[in-house]
Image 1 (tube, rainbow, N blue to C red):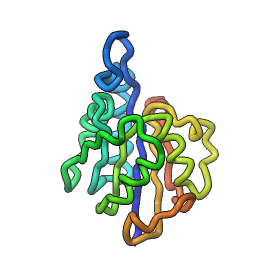
Image 2: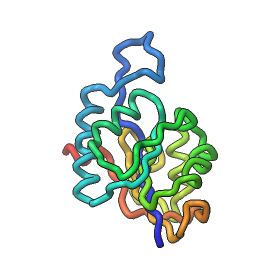
Image 3: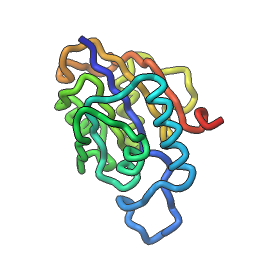
Length: 166
């Protein structure tokens, strides 16, 4: 069996209200277009998850909603994914039960987590900083998520919304 992880940073958020709490920031116009482009990319590549782990922030929830997915299970909104460190992401991923998992989170943790998962990073200049909307598809040879080890994820794809919209 294999396990597939779709690791996504939320789309671009709005900074129009300087007094708004970080957790409550929604997507901006570019972010909404980016999420729609990512939705098309996911569908075109037949990457429909059967489990979703999503931060509780407004921008991650809105990113997920705009993906318009129909997973076989309800999304699991995890407060611990909000600005999570890589070790927290590991804990949540290894508790997953689906074979194809979508995880939507935040930087700086998600960039470090992606680097820890990859057996070999892609030759893309933006993988290291993992900008908004960055999405990597990892393939792991495992029967259960508890079996994965650092640097064993084979990268199947890496994309940015900016490239999809070009």
